Image 1: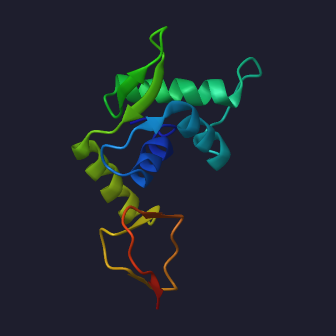
Image 2: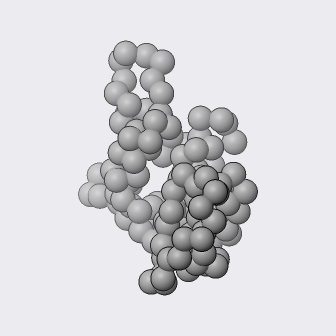
Length: 126
């Protein structure tokens, strides 16, 4: 996978399995996180991020789930196996800690970039 797509792919691990992710929301998050760079002045960061989105679709990393009347993707999902891969890589790199799938105790010395909760559990800081 090209290096410019890797952070965008790992960001998908923040969403639960079989969750409909809005393209506009996802593209805006990628821009806000700084995952998107623009080497030209002719395209906006949102246009570049949308291009990344369609690259991930063409690589079968995400699947379109809802289309508008013109055939543009409105929402997408990530296949369960691909989601598991993204979560595994994200955990190894301390990119994400997902509550509800692991122990609910987090060591205070661990550096985690994102915290995601798919289930309601009590969070205890050690």
